[in-house]
Length: 453
Image: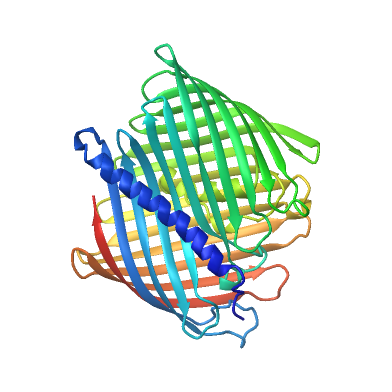
């Protein structure tokens, strides 16, 4: 029953080193920037350490009644949020990682959660920048089965490269960007190296409004060329970005094409991200797009939305691992409402994948999500989270539905310490089985906050 250890040790070290290195780099850069406090514009951070224990009545999420396996799971982890805007350094990090130990050895010990961070160094202010991006998380090894410890695959996506900007008068600029990326999987044979470049001719209409013409090209080269096929993509598009007091907008429209094994497909590139603050306590968001993409880009975009757009959460674990390119269409919308004691979030995400060669993977995914949190007193709060997810495959007719609900409570023991209590319900039903699997999980976690600023 235990998951193979064949690559876990090496993968843990590699992923841990990259994630830890980026975190240390961000913290060190932040500390250096803070020495010049008068030049620093904003630093917001929060770090919580946690340790807990959960009980599951069906940890393998089996379908047949009577075959359920009970398990007790210990965990140690942390959550991190960092948003830093300085004269020389900008960084944005969101992380939620935990090490799990299965007391009855149903599965091997594992690390779960995600790390998504970026770091930009201003080597020559407004002229030369160097960018680092790190995205770590898990996907389902088999997208047709429920997510369990036996059906999770580590994915690590690291990117770095420079931006060179040349001013052309007071408002115009020319920018050349280059990126090198390393995208690795725990066991699946889709490891690849990426090379990309973008040329941008832009005009600053105001301090926060920019209009630009962009031409980009990127190549994905797979490590195992005998079983995978490299991907080439090009795009030319017009981009407009604006940030107002209540509205944020980023929109692109243009032309894109993809080439695989000498065969080229082309189509429309269009993307829209819109956020609007309706009042001091409420906001809405809207996102839509169509483009040629691949598994690595979809995985990173899902994690990035946790830090780039408030309340827009896309489940990275639903990413399909493949060496094929596909036309990716998506639409998302949501509503956020927050007062002193109450938080409400509602969201919906629709996506469609149409593959160039692996047409049996063509699918449509819809996810509905909600979060309600209420502060009952200064020391006690409760929350309810829900998610309904459905995917349908065109070729096979396969479809499955998953429902997850989590009821939680937080008891604050002091300014820095607290206890959380959770009950989680999971139910899945698929078209190729006669009944659905159900799991109930209860747990308690001790939380220690190192501070927020």
